[in-house]
Amino acid sequence: MKKIILVGAFISSQIFLFAQVKSIIGAGKEVDPFHYAIIKSQTFDKASVACANPIAANVGAVIMKQGGNAFDAAIAVNFALAVVYPAAGNIGGGGFLVARKSDGKSIALDYREMAPAKAFRDMYLDSNGKEQLNLSQFGHLSSGVPGTVAGLFAMHRYAKLPMKKLIQPAIDLAENGFAISEREANSLNSKSLRESFIKNSTAVPVFVKDIKWKAGDTLIQKDLAETLKRIRDNGQKGFYEGKTAELIVAEMQKGNGIISLNDLKNYQVKERNALSFIYKGNTIIGMPPSSSGGIIVCQLMKMMEKRYLDGFQTARTTQLMVEAERRAYADRAEYMGDPDFWKVPIKTLTSDAYLQQRMMDFDSTKATPSKNIKVGLIKESEQTTHISIIDQYGNMVSITTTLNNSYGSRTVVAGAGFIMNDEMDDFSVKPGVANMYGALGGEANAIQPGKRMLSAMSPTIVLDKNNKPFIVAGTPGGTTIPTSVFQTLINIMEFNMNATDAVNQPKFHHQWFPDEVQVEKTFSPDTRKKLEAMGYKIVEKGAIGRTEVIKILADGKRETAADKRGDDSVAGF
Ligand code: DON
Image (cartoon, rainbow, N blue to C red; front, side):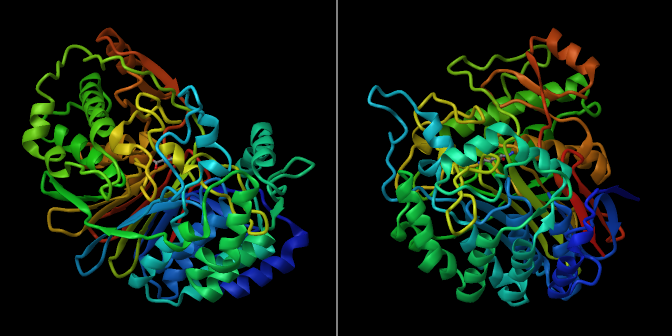
C-alpha cells in the first residue's frame, strides 16, 4: 500500500541548483528538494523513516541506503529538518531520543534546553507579581540554552558515518534552497507570524518577504548554511563556542536576553535510564524526566491494562481513557520536574499498586470533576516535531524535538540564521498559572538556573512479547503528546489497527485542567453525545498531534505511516 500526494513544486529555473544538491548528497534521484512527493504510508522491507517533511525523510532513507544506521539517519534528518521545517526542526531548541539498539541496549538522551545561569524563579512576574507571558513565550528572554546540537553529537556515538557527511545535506539545502510546500507558504504568510518575527528579531529574517510566499518558492538560508558549516568544521564547538556562540550572545544582548557565553559552553546532554514497563507482555520504552511523557504514557497504559475495552472510541473506552488522563495530568502538575533538581517519585508513580489505587474512585457512569483551581487554555498550531526510524540492522530510534511554539521565540539569531526556542514557558512561571498548553505546575517545575523545564514529549518504542521490534512512535502537540501516543499504542495493541489508521483516526484529550475533553472534529458524534450525558464537557479542537509510526510486521517488514495532519512523509527501502 502506498499513498502519495504530489507537491506542486516545480521550478524550471532551479534545475541547476537541484542538480548540484543531488550530486552533493550523492543520493541519485531520491533527494530532490525541488520536485518531491509526500508519501503518507508505505511498507518497506528493510529501513524506514517517518517525519514532518518529505525532503528530510528522503535524506534519512538515503543515509541508511548508503550504509548508515538509524542514528546516522536521525542526525541527518534532524539537521535537514532544521532547514526545511523551520517551524519546529531546529538547532536552536532541544529534544529527547529514545532508542533501542539491535544489541538490545536501550538509550534515552535528554538534550532539553537548560535555564540560563541568570534565570530566576520569578523572572516572568512584574512588580505586582502578575505573570508576563509575552516574555516567557516570545522574544529573547523566552529562550532556554539550546540542546539540539549537543544532542546530535551525543547520538553520533552510536552512528557509523562521519558527522561531516550527515550534516552536508542540510548545508546544501540551506545554501542552495528548496521548494517550500503550500502548507509552509501559508504558514509563513500568517500576518501575526510575520509581525512577530519582525518584533522579536533584531535583523529581518529570511522568512519575512515583502510579497507573499507561494508553493514552489525557493527558500535559501545563507546565514544558516554558514552556521552549519561551522558545526561541520569545528564539531559541537562550532555552535557552543566561537562565532556562533558570539552571535547568539550578541543577539541576546540586543534584545534583553540573558543567555551568556558560559551558558552555551556549559550546556550538557544527559544520558538517562530509559523508562520501560511491560504492557500485556510487550515492553514499552519511553523517556523519563525531564520529560513527563514516559511516566504519563506508562500510567495511562497501566490504568487500562486490566480493564475491558469494548471497542474503538466507544463511550465506555473513551470515558475510561479520559479518566485515566485526568489523573495522570494531575500527577504531572504536582510531582514532575527536572530530576537533577527535584526528586521525581518515578517508581511510585508507575507502580501497579499506586495506579490501581489511583483509579479507585473511577465511576463508569459519570465524569469525575477535576477540582477547579485554574482553567488553562489550549492553543492550536504550536509546533514540535517527531522522527521515527528503523534501520536494516534492527536499530530503532524515536526522537521528538522542539522550539516549543511554532517558529519558537520568533527570535532569529542575526548573522546565524536560526530560530531560538521559547522553551522557558514550559517552566511553571507561577504556581496556578497555566503555560501556553494550559499545563499547570508548581515547585517541582519552578525556574532555577541550569534547570530543565518539564516536557511532555514522548518518543516511544515498543518490543513485542519476544523482545523483537514492534512499534516506533511519537508526535508533537504540547500536552496532547502523551495522550496521542497513548491512543496510538492502544489503537495498535488493543484494536489491531494498521499504522495508518492508528495515526489518522480521530484523537481526543483530557489534561485534568481545563476540565474538558478536547476532540477532533471527526470524533464520533454518538460517543460525544453519550459522554455529554455522563457530564463531560466536550470541546472541538483542530488537529491533535502529527504522529509518525513504524509498525514492524510479523514478517519483519516496516509498515510506516506519516500523519495526514501535515506535510509529514515516509521514505525507506
Ligand atoms: O516539551 C514540551 O512538552 C513542549 N514544549 C512541546 C511543544 C509542542 O509539542 C508543540 N507542538 N505542537
